[in-house]
Length: 531
Image 1 (cartoon, rainbow, N blue to C red):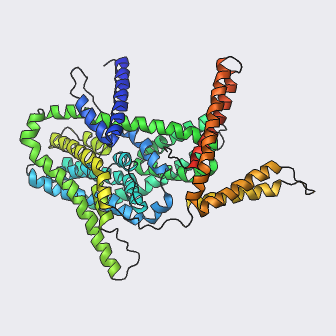
Image 2 (image 1 turned 90 degrees about the horizontal axis):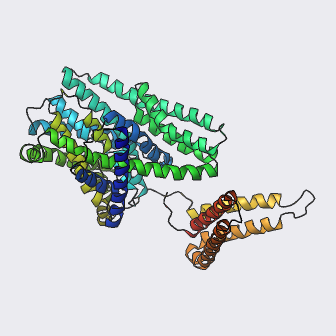
Image 3 (image 1 turned 45 degrees about the vertical axis):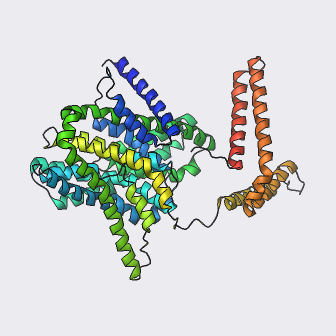
């Protein structure tokens, strides 16, 4: 395909992804499910060129920024508090799934070597960060569940990649060293964390000295790929390096990033993440065409491979419930014997954790890296696609319904201070600064309007903290009038520009001020704003 034709195809796919995303919103379905199904349907459109995905390129292009986005917004306090539970899912559940899927696969397909069966288990074992993020950001979960699931999605890819590497090596060489596998995993994990931390601090050292908002945003964007590639180059885990860099940068950005850069970077990053998520799911759907062609088409799959493939899909879903509820039983027993640190989730929360095992781009990319000489390669590819399709479409689409039916309980204690109380504390700090500097050295009031403004704001936030509902009933008409005034001001500004009375620079400067003022009012009024 010619380069221009390739670019045109990418643009067409992006347009299709936007249309499918819109349809998903109209149908109240997860966009990931709609994109995956839509991509699979587009793959069979006559005349559409075959899409060949380079697995290493897919991982490098798509995985780092999407991992960075999840890590950047990670609630680090809850992540650290629930790290044992996160590791249970990200390491224990992945290893357990790999073993059980391997055993069941060998029972279903006896001619497939044991190591190849475990390679398939490693392919389908890690729930995907991108698929999980695409679904979880559209549902409301208790804080502990969200911390567990988001933390799992950030760390489990490394476990699956390590297990897959050893399983493939064992299949092709006939040798496996358990001790070497443990040492390798430890090096990948701790080495990746060290590399990610060093890359993040190095980038932040440079960012502080750039003095340009655009360069700051560009550097922050490059951080994810720098951490991932550095980790891989040093034979550590690029996944863990990226996650570590994202957590470190997300923790420090509050004090090192100017407000204007944060607004600019947030808007750019949301657009980038949306584009990458949309493209990766539609590309996964399109790539099914070639996989089906390798095994003789859909009829061949249905007649010869349907039973073992369906068996693996069912095992992948069931084994997660076995691990989750088995862990629940152990935690309950420990708590009954007097271990206060053991905190079982409860059957409601455990049911949701069991149902959130969506697979995605990592499973696809690992499957596509299977060597041509790998026994059962085509069967493994088709199985990987089936697992992705069923978990994303069925589990992802029904997750909101499951949450509504199960009604999970948020047992994780909230922080002692509410949003309203925090706003009141910030307003008091502002008022203290105004009271301190509103008077000259001889005691004369030199900033009366500023002092009056901050005093009124502090009193208003105190009222809001004491009785939010009553306060909002009184203040909402005030905010509405302010928004109307801003809209009229913007109309007048545009009229002046259209009549040639002001320069473009004046238009942009004043429009930016009005936009910031409007967003401030929207946030104060409590309207929902997309992150």
